[in-house]
Image (cartoon, rainbow, N blue to C red):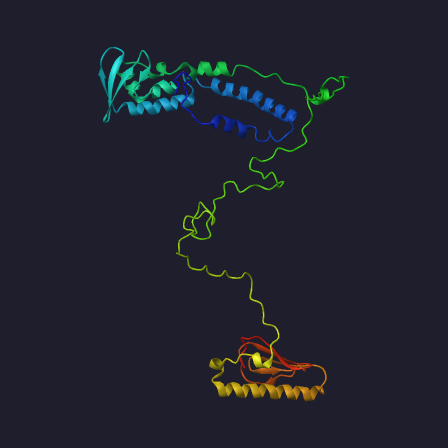
Length: 333
């Protein structure tokens, strides 16, 4: 790193600070944004200059605070003089050299920021000198006031601007030589045969025979081998399973384990058929009768509950042109 700038900041904090300084002005129109920035800087020059005029020290306040910290660390250094301006300094387990004439130290901290390090301050105190005299001149109060001595003149508002009778036209359009381009710029990996479709560039192939990447089935090295892979497992269908719909009475499953045996299943089936016949008689043989088994109750279409056998789930029994039972395969009779 160069030691001529006398700054140890290697980040973009200065740009970020200025960006936050104009945070309200940067969203405006270009002319209004420049006017707000000009007004802010005009006021900033005056405020900073007046603040520094109140201090009487040789250095700027913040630089003086950093120098005081280095003075406190200088008490931990051991100085061994080699000449009037060249010294060897012991700092804990480290040994460094300091040159007061060249204003250099082995740690290069004094070289970079222009503020004497603790090793240099120990040598300055050894010579009964003043540490403030060895600070770079850019950190002095006099140089700070000289930097902010300039002013920005104020400007009148738009209302007081002079009126000028001059037409403002846009700049002329320059037409380049040659025929204008009509075709769009295509992607380098775009398929020339299919407009807007990309090729398979960059896609890694997977062999369907050996399931390895880098080749396909046609160029598979194990093409002639007899070893085969286990058949892939069938993929699970997405979504809910479809309902079975209408089923005949002969296809309705009787869960004997839930009912309690084959004999009880036959008795429940006979009881169900009796209920269907009863509904047919009440309806006069016309229309449609429906019996719903729900938690031990039989609900015909009339809405009157009839005691029935306990069951799991709902079973709809309808009578139409042919005797059929509408229900799910998981129903229990």
